[in-house]
Length: 79
Picture (cartoon, rainbow, N blue to C red):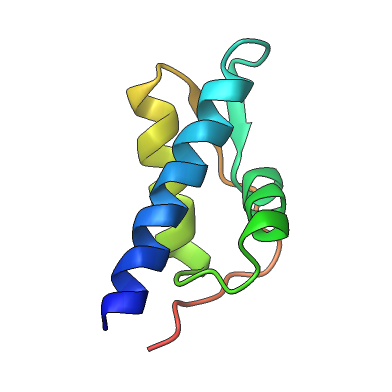
């Protein structure tokens, strides 16, 4: 359980870093592009699908960016 909490915390930090980097040059964050980039760094991501999209969207909105929900195949979180 403790390892899952660490992975989730790391994921949130990576999403924040991704959005922070993108906001300098972009007005909109693509959820599929963000997920692909983050999965390169954290391949065993603790969440996926709509939950991942929601996490990305929440960070983007907090930073004043729009969100493009462009996942081609909807998936659900494991569990």
